[in-house]
Length: 265
Image (cartoon, rainbow, N blue to C red; front, top):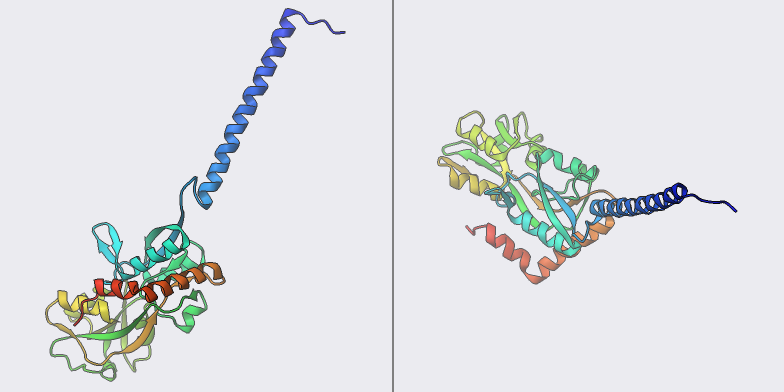
């Protein structure tokens, strides 16, 4: 049998204390690690985040009110977030970066007055449409441009990456000037740098109301439908988006949201 002296007993006690402390520290570290992992997923007792990518230069669908992005798309996105059970986060970016953000997972969905086209369907899946829109032509008062055919050979301003940009390429012999923001194209028109602007009807009405000397021609340039973009193959989110849109339509809430931001002519 081993005989322990006072010094040996003290060492044994110290080792036991050390082991208990180490276990406690490991337990705390493990708990903290689990919490961090949970935060990445759904948050420690917090809602997970649903990130909406948009370009907040497109009233009344998305624009700034103070430091907050508001508009039709923002309210639809909030309804989708409620359906998913998540906290809505809105990321403002260039319009032509939205589908890339969705495809790479930097954003969960894109809402930006976005029309479904065959090219865009190569990079994202789209929900059922939630709005019908038209692309229209803005010109200065006194302009000879009265129909889409009159754009032939003219210099036309569009917002980069929009359907106006896409369809403008079909205008015969036209020079297309591309701008990052719709109002930049309108400013170029006011400064006689271009002959016309092609843009969605609702923002067009806002720009015309805010600037004298310009108007919207009577004949629309195109007719289209807006939808929500999600990452290709994300059927779970797409189903929830479609459910939220259907609920908004059936309850009359969608019409209420649109009427809130769109003034009847």
